[in-house]
Picture 1: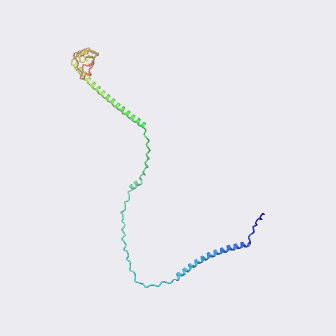
Picture 2: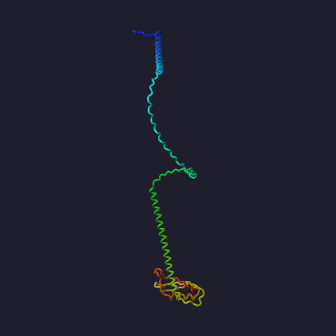
Picture 3: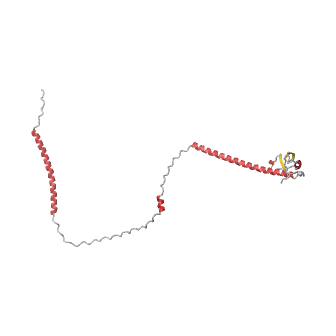
Length: 248
């Protein structure tokens, strides 16, 4: 058998009214409680004020002996302030210098040095050594040239002394002809041995006076053997000798 569906009945109007009344009663009770608490608090404060005012004054006690006066502490003497002497006013020059003192310049930051290159260092060392060798070679060459010049000068001086000795001996054997005029020069080529013995005499340049040329040639042959050089290395097999009639 199938059951019939239940039907919802509407709420009775009396229940709604009773619910509203219950809510209103609760609200009234809460308001009454709040008002009562507030009223009691105000009344207690008023009573407390009246009690303070109603307290009778305390009985006056007879005056006793006055308390002994307290000894007032003596004031400590204040330290006298130190009077500093007035500082002299700075001179205008010093003040000006202080004002115009330049601001310190920021120091430049040192740049990091590049790592050394071993090949570059080796090349620099080789260049320096080459320059040293070149300078040493130049100094040695200059010294050698100086020594050569000194040796040549010494040899020339010794050779000049050697020729002067020969010419001196030959002049001592010249018989000056009477018909010689002026001061003509005759040049002779003399061939000799290491001992100084004259082998041959040849007129290389005539003076223009045959008598003077012949007289000089006879004097050379008569002077054999000729003087020897002070240094054996100065000996020369062939000599060139020059003579003039008037010589110092």
